[in-house]
Every structure is written in C-alpha cells, then in structure tokens.
Image 1 (cartoon, rainbow, N blue to C red):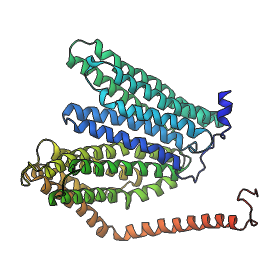
Image 2: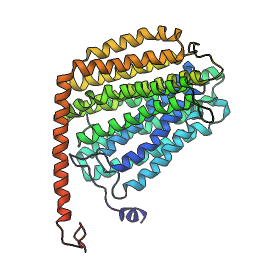
Image 3: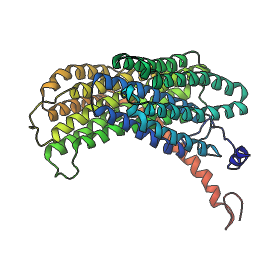
Image 4: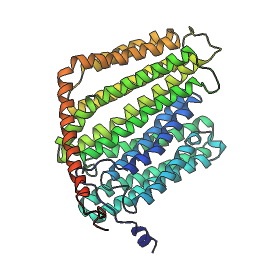
Length: 445
C-alpha cells in the first residue's frame, strides 16, 4: 500500500546517454559539504598522527558511500518520480553520520552511542541506494543484477565490520589495544571496499559519460571550497578589526586555491571528459572506475590536508599575540605543502590514467613543494603561505605558456560543442513559443 502511494509521485526514470547532473544531486551534495567540514574541524581540534589517520579512514569510507551514490545516479534520475523522497531519507542519515563522526574514534570506554549512530546511518545511506539498485535491476535485469551483486555483499560485510568497530573495543583490556582493534577494523572496511571494487568491471558501466564526469568535477569543487572555509575559520576575524597580515593571508589563500582549481579544470579535466566520451565498453568502465572513483580520493584527501595546514598557519598570522615574523609552529607547514603534493600527485595519476600523458611541469612543482617544506618551516607563516602560492601560481603560469597551442585547441573544441548544444536546446525551446496562444507547453490549455 505504502509502495503504491510512493509510486504515485512518478516512476523510476533511467538516465539517458547524454544526461547531465540533476539539480537534486547538487542539493544532495550539500550534506557532503558538511561532512568534509566536520572531518576538517574534528581533526583541527587536535592535530596528531592518530587524528590524521582517523580522518583519512573516515574520508575513505565516506568517499566510498559517495562512489556508490554516483553509480546509482548514473543509472537513475535522482530528481524524478518518487526517488527524491528516498534520497531525502539518505540525506538525513548522511547528516547524522557526519554529526557522529567526531565520536567514532573517541575513548572506547566512553560509550558506543556515537559509533553506533555512525553504523546505523551508514546502513540507511547504503540501504537506500541498494534499494534503488534493486529497482534498476528489475528494469534492466542483466546489467542491474551485476550492479546489485557487486555492491550488496560488500555493503553487508562492511556494515558488520563497522558494527564490530563500535562494540568490540569496549571489551578489550587496555586503551592502547582497544584503539588498535578499532582502527584495524576501520582499515579492514576500507581495504574490503576498495579491493573488491577492482575485481572486474561489472557494475562500473557508465550510461552517460557527461553525467559521470560532471558529477565528479562538482564534488571536487565542493572539496576545494573546504580550503576557502578553513582560511576563513583560521582568520577568526569576527568581532576583530581586519589587519594587513590577515587580509594578505586571505588573498594568498584564495590565490593558491584558485591555482589548484585551474590545474585540474583548465586542461586536464576537460580533456579527460572527452577521453571518457570516446571510450566505449570495458575501457570506459575501467577508466570511470580507476580515474574517477579511485584517483579522485587522493586529490580530495590532499585538499583536506592542506586545508588543515592553511587554517593553522592563518590562525597564527591573525593572532595578535604572535609576532608577524615568527615561524609557523607544529605540523602546519608539512600539512600545507604535503596536502598540495598529495593533490598534484593524485591529479598526475588521473592524467596518466585518462590521457596517458604526464606533464613535466607538475613533476617540477612537486619537487619544489617537497624542497619547500624545510624552507617554509623556517619562514614566518605569511612567507610560507606566500612561497606555496608562488609555486602553485607559477605552475599555472608556466603551463599556460608552454601548453598554449594545445590548450587553445581544446578550449575551442569545448566551446564549439557547448555552442552546438546550446543552439539545439534553444531550437527545442522555440517550440514552446510556437504553441497556440494560451496553450501550455504540455499541450493543455
């Protein structure tokens, strides 16, 4: 009865080969913005080796839920029919998942409420997506069953391991051993998910290459927004008059974030999009899996790391009790430079997998950033931030000059495609104006 009422909202609609990202998918990603924010905030409260490990484990599990979400979204239109109702339930569960993350790695003797909320939320999130995959299996039995059989067993076993991570450590004597058991179970979840994803290409088929690439490009932009938020949080200017070091740090933060955006979206991202469109069958499936589902993770991890470093450095720069010329303390410089290195290395692997090329400018930038860590640790915080920004902006400037011909050719091709697509859409919409006066586009008066 309830299912019939739900279906009155409309049926499940399959994604077409030329489909674009639905507005509801962007709405869904708002909760992922909060999740990235929580991971960064929880780690920034006390930056240690253990907290960084926990952040990466949580990010890996969270990212896999997003990968499953993207697999469903490339088969079913999430904004049509009764599907949005189910996705709002998944959004609420994801919001609870993010809120409970800071307690997921707390003292095992302090209670299991937080870790259990993480597990229950995880079950609801993946349960909704698994149900949608089962509906797709009914509509397309062969391909749908492959997708369902790929993800269902992994979801079940990973849920069991997360539940064990929530309950078993409290039974282990000694906090050190308890923490080791908990971290080991979380690591087992990550290994299970990512290792099983590499077995074959069944379930990784992409109906719309345009939708798949656009979906991942948007989530990377959302992650880059976290670095902007971190610079803003680190400046802590609420109720304080702005100072020139604070404003300089804010400008540098925007500049190096924009340079990292440019490094992916100016040439590499658009060229990889075309490469996925060109690929068909098994090559397309493996490229979609390797380059997007897997290699976007180190880029997002790098963003989280350099956001942590940027926040710590900017906080020191804007602190009136800290002299402007005092070097940055703690792990802020290694996190800042190391995060950008991780981002660029992930991007180079992405380029290598999709385009089968490697740009020498990226290699030089990584070498300079590595050499800049000990140098930046001895510089004042603002100077260290300036050094990083100079390397990132320099990378972009050199590539604009050295790749000018290929870059312009790529941009012209993308512009021609976009112009043709927009002209086709305008011609289609012109039919609405051709209707009789007072007639609705659907044909109703």
